[in-house]
Each structure stands twice: as C-alpha cells, then as structure tokens.
Image 1 (spheres, rainbow, N blue to C red):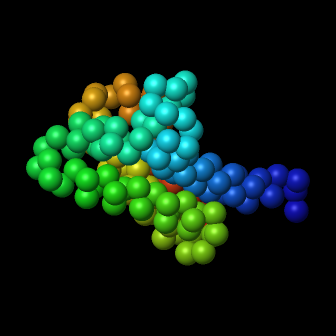
Image 2 (cartoon, one colour):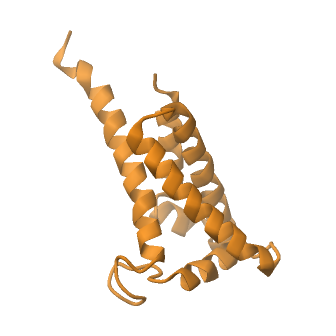
Length: 136
C-alpha cells in the first residue's frame, strides 16, 4: 500500500467537517453568536435579518411562507451538520446536504445573479457534498 492510500479517507473526513462547520457557522450567525449586525464578518447577526435575506432569495413565494422556509433551512442545517460529523448514514446526509446547497445556489443565482453564488462558493459546496455522497 502506498503512502497516498490514506488521502481519500482524510479528504472525506476533512470535507465532512468543513461542510458541517459551514452549516453550523451560518446558523450561529443567524442567532448573533458571531456578533451583532454590522460587526466585521457577520452576515446577519440576528434571525430577523436572516429572514429578510430569505425573503429576498425566495421573493416568488408568499411572504407568509418565508419564516417557514427560514426555520426549515436552519433546522435542516443543524441536522445535516450533526449527521455529517457523526458519519452515520453518511451517504444520505451528504446527498441531502448537496440538495439543500443546490437549492440555495439556484435561489441565490436567480435572485442575485451568478457572482454572489460563486463568490460564496455555494455551487462548490453543493458539488463537494455530492462528491462526498459518491464515495464509498
């Protein structure tokens, strides 16, 4: 066995952790754990601002559904992060992560254009999650 034989396993673990921490970081931001609104490197800082952003991305939906989608995304991100970190049913959690990220990338691209979705690496994260799901 060559020295490189362990790299795919290391890469899969690194990818699981990176995706999970990205989900958890976004959730932490929504609840002000990275600082209040307007602080450096804080996107939202409070949940109401996250819901405003959700409304921007999902402007084609009735406004009464925006909180439902905002909370659903938040809950799914926490569940997916736990699943990715645990490694339990990894293929399923990775596929679900890819689908959630793909939906976000498409909504972001539709609402804001190509540049923001690429600059925030949403398409890359989605593809990475799908790649993780394909590993055995």
